[in-house]
Length: 61
Image 1 (cartoon, rainbow, N blue to C red):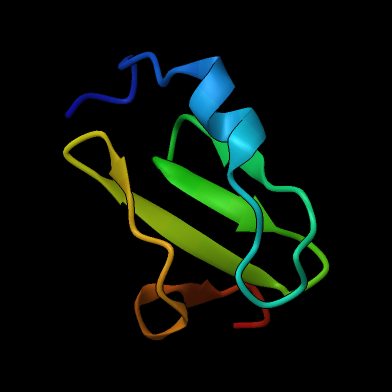
Image 2: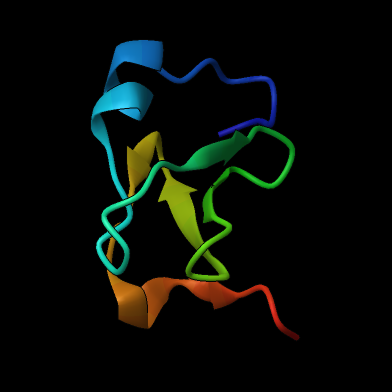
């Protein structure tokens, strides 16, 4: 999937962080959903958000 792939905005609005239950920011360049409050970035693979904490990247690196 290229960084220019458009993700469905309604899907993004419906997704919440599994840790904080807060909102997520979409990073189109990195293809991630970012939870600033949990300091985690969840990957989007083949257009599918992977909302597993074990698969998330820490933003504190």
